[in-house]
Amino acid sequence: MEKVSVIIPNWNGQRFLQVCFDSLAAQTYKDFAVYLVDNGSADDSLSYVKLNYPDINIIALPENFGFSAAINAGINGSKGELVAALNNDTASDPKWLEEIVNVMDSRADIGFCASLLLDFNDRTIIDSFGDNYSLIGLSGKIATREDFRVVGDEPTEVFSACAAASVYRRSMLDKIGHFDEDFFCYMEDVDIGIRAQLVGYRCLAIPAAKVYHIGSASTGGDMSAFSLSMTAKNLICVLIKDMPLLLLLVMLPLSLAAQALLVLESLLTDRRPKFKKNLSAYFNGLGQGLRLLPLMLQKRKQIQATRTVSVVQLAKLIYQSRAQNLAFRK
Image 1 (spheres, one colour):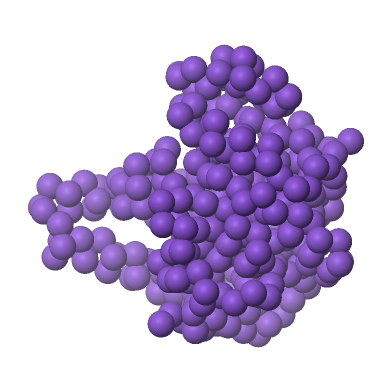
Image 2 (image 1 turned 135 degrees about the vertical axis):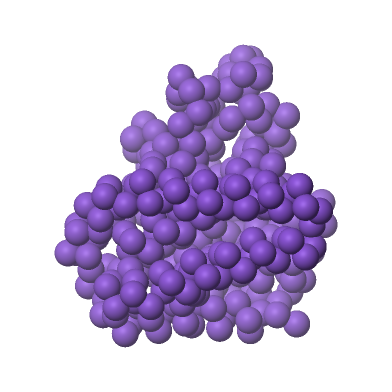
């Protein structure tokens, strides 16, 4: 049985797989297995992998169930002590896994780790050094678009990990629950991060664990109508599920207002047809979030019943994560 199970969700991503798999084959750390979870691709992904990479474990889903479901299928179909989530549109530095495993072996208090995600084409520019979360209920990438040198050389505690390249202890996932499949995609990694923080797990971002990321290759970009709709839905779900009541009462109206301002901003910067499309996507996402409210309230009961950190502690962690992101800015 491998120590690390590397799980790669795939949906019509055959064009990325050679670079992704070849970089994994070059890893200096060898005690791992790769699981490609295919979300009903219509391209030649499966036949390509079977022909060219026979050692890759394939889990084929009948249709596109989303990122969260694909990761969960990989978790359930593997046995590694550590679970690595990795996007298909990535290339991993040869020491990626070695650096993370060394840290996690030496730090039993760390439940999960973030990689240093760098832009695939300009490998001096940061895509993400983990995820931050704010008291207005919005999440973001830490140090995005900054020079890689701003994060230094030492592992840094961050709020959460971007699931494009992250590693989790299986024991932690078994305790807090796996990825929430009602999210489909977007914000599922922030949700995992909050649930981990609620019971005392911590996250380290490791500068030496480098992964090069194309980004938003399957969903059309950060501001596509699809991503806007999913984000609006999942922001509500995260707050309802994960926030203690006092923080929820403060953060929910602030989050809705902040999202509305972001959509209105597109009226000033985009052409009118795009604004209409974004507005429609935003309200569609809100509607989906409201329809999921009864289910999120059920999940909330279990999450809040097992919470071990106080409201003040959680608020402090959230505030510090936002302040940390600002500190990395030039």
